[in-house]
Amino acid sequence: MRTKILSLLFMCCAGFASAQACPDRYRFVDFGLETNDGALIRGGTIFRAFLPDNTPLLLTEQTSCEDVQYLAKDGRQLTVPVVSTISVNTALIDIGFDTLRLSKVNNVDARANENAQKHHQSSATATRGDTFLCKQGEDQTSSCQMLSPFGNNITLVIYCDQSHCNMPALAFNETLMFDATWPHDTSTSETLGQDISAKLVLLHDFLTQHMDF
Image 1 (cartoon, rainbow, N blue to C red):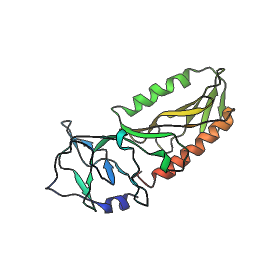
Image 2: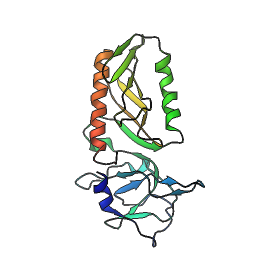
Image 3: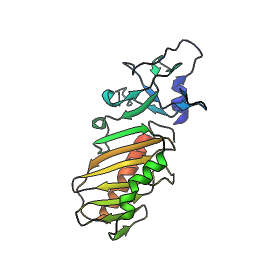
Image 4: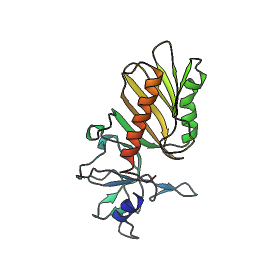
């Protein structure tokens, strides 16, 4: 995937203007890099922001672009904006999510651990599987600690009520974090853990088409 993305992008040393807002048209976004002195530059994680039929994939009003000089352009001479947050138009993808957002955060590990506290402090009986540990509370809410689909060791806990599941903090890497919601209608912790595992596989498979792992 990395080779495919990089083959569509090329960098030039001149001719790029400072980005003040998201461009009207773009095909890729860049989460940027911070220099040692704290400046934000291009060259971070790239997200391919279009579908195979060239349909734009992101919700424009929920995508935040940064003011960065010397932006890259892709193979079609479209600017590659540096972003801090993107939201996927989930109506265009068949993985059953209501919302899906990727954001740059200061401390992914701290955010993930904070999100996991309620689950860890729960005294409810745990149901274990190969990829999950779920607890079901008396109020019909459940929480599941899951293996990350990205193979990292940053804690991942997902919370579900009787109608929806909420994934507040899925770490992609040390600086980027997904959050997502989707409908939920299962009633047992064991089934819930299996269902969430299947949902994470769908997410992983979708992202392999749009990001470098």
